[in-house]
Amino acid sequence: MNKDAKIYVAGHRGLVGSALVRSLERQGYTHILTRTREALDLTDHAEVKRFFETERPEIVLDAAAKVGGIRANDTYPADFIRDNLLIQTHLIDCAYRSGAKKFVFLGSSCIYPKHAPQPLKEDYLLTGPLEPTNEWYAVAKIAGIKLCQAYRRQYGFDAIALMPTNLYGPGDNFSLENSHVLPALIRKFHDAKVAWAKSVTVWGTGTPRREFLHVDDLADAAVFLMETYSDEAIINIGVGEDLSIRELAEMIRKVVGFEGDLVFDPQKPDGTPRKLLDVSRLHALGWRARINLEEGIRATHEWYQSNCHRVAR
Image (cartoon, rainbow, N blue to C red; front, side):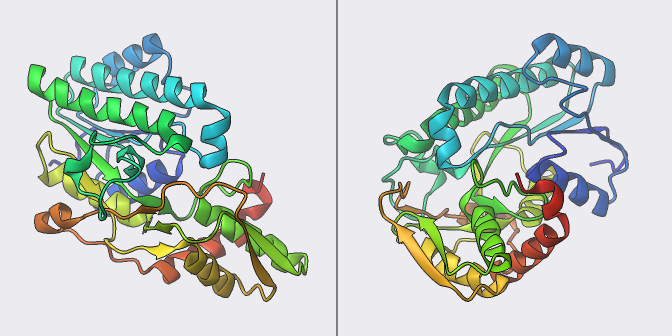
């Protein structure tokens, strides 16, 4: 692709969107379009249509979404399904109608059935019931996948759909109310260390297993696939390795330097028992993750220490 191609990154201030901008700039792309939520409401079709008719980006990277952890999904189910359906529908349709040459849709590993065989292959999509604690978000993302496939089949629109595993990194959401497990644990252990607390309590039993990918790795994979991949088949993006929540908590406790006790609350939900992606299709295309989990957690904690005064909420 031409390095001066006009590329619109939707959701550029979020965890994934900001990493996409960094990756594009590192790789020499010079014409990156962004809009804040205040400047462009992606749930408003008229605003999105006007933006695409005016700017006419050649490539669209869709990192815009309403996201959150178990508590947020359980508390705001209508918001999660409505807002995500609106955002992705407006972006895909307006990108096609304005003549965009490429659309990259970022989904989520939560699209797969709760009890699907592990590791999760792309072919397991729609083969069983979803995890109830995030089905609203998952259903919206599945609709986005199908919309990309439908526009490819009916209109020949070059839309691809990528399914990242659990992400973390600089710019993450560290709220204790609606963040994902890794940044929430960094925040908990950091706060406990500062307060000289005797223990930290973690939701659930600690037995579920999860895979974690640094957001800069995800961004590099997305740009790689933007440049090299064109097919309706979805592509998993991950590291191909997982660990238990207990092991994750122990690793974060070590990195942060908290010396108190670790307590698990089995009265709180565990979520899906295991969620590991099969990344053989991605590896066959020539891309592998490079950032070690412990190193990534250390760098993310350092970022949090430097920014906690403005991101802890």
